[in-house]
Amino acid sequence: MTNNTNLLEIRNIDKSFGGVQALSDIDFFLEQGSITGLIGPNGAGKTTLFNLITGLFPADKGEIRFGGRPINNFRVNELVRLGIARTFQNVELFESMTVLENILVGLHTRTRCGIIESIFRFPYIRREEQQARERAIELLEFVGLQDYADRTSTDLPFGWQRLLELARAMASKPRLLLLDEPAAGLNMSETGRLEELIRKVRDQGVTILLVEHDMNLTMSISEKIVVLDQGRKIAEGPPREVQTDEAVMAAYLGKAKS
Image (cartoon, rainbow, N blue to C red; front, top):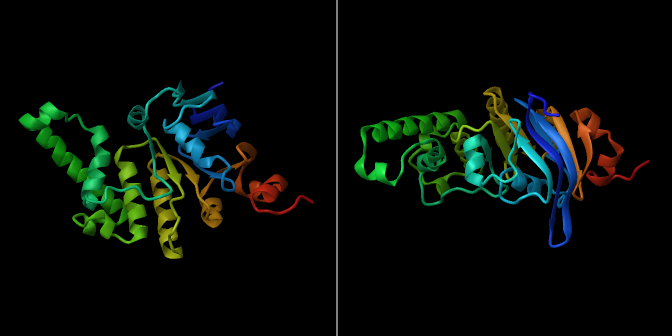
């Protein structure tokens, strides 16, 4: 039964590749406005699940519901328009573009401009472009990169590129944001700044699903933790509860069961 407070529902999802079972009977939900951590050892199926939610691959079995509607057969662009956005393990920026232009690309999904409109430069197109530019600058201010708008994205330090990717994901006005190892490669100071920004994103009403190997960050920021191991869900609950779960300690932390 669908709960009106659940933004995303994962129902009995299976996925295999070439006979290898990547996910098996995965079932959990995300409440509207929550931060959920998705953890597990390498190869547990975390990124595969992200790819199913964002439409890169179809599920073999089960159902994914977003806002109460099934989205299994939606294309990536359709899901972005519905309000699902993500970042990637490896920073995926347009290297030849400026910082500002990278944000404007993210805003394109929310504009009406097509080829014909671009050619004839109708007045509403000029207004829309100005509004997009203003919104892009707001997003850069949000992550603290407003002074680097005209710099090429690859000129930024790695940690700042992570912040730019977060700002670009926010440009599509997501209701659900999937963050795939956003703290990878960041130092302690940068990670603290990232944690603050993630909380601010949540405070704007965005639901967040977080995959992150930095357990201090994950346990500090998440209200619920879902644990995968070898494609199966082995635990789900509040951080304190999950940290002391014997199956989690055995599979994820490498400790033997007592």
